[in-house]
Length: 79
Image 1 (cartoon, rainbow, N blue to C red):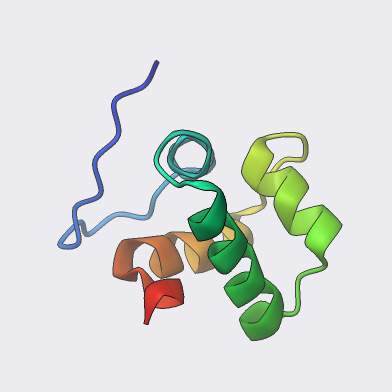
Image 2 (tube, one colour):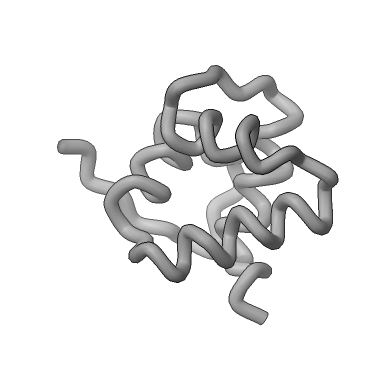
């Protein structure tokens, strides 16, 4: 298993693998739901595509990595 720790001061973007590991291992069911709902509302993702990307069934493009990485680093869905 990949060890993953979010550092809010990180200068680099999170990779797709790091985001998927975070989604898979660090979030409980309620937090996953809140994150997906936030991404659907703010960035107009469809539920099926964003859930598949976060689960690793579909690959993320660079835009997805940057947008979702910023949301995760700043924990915007919790605000």
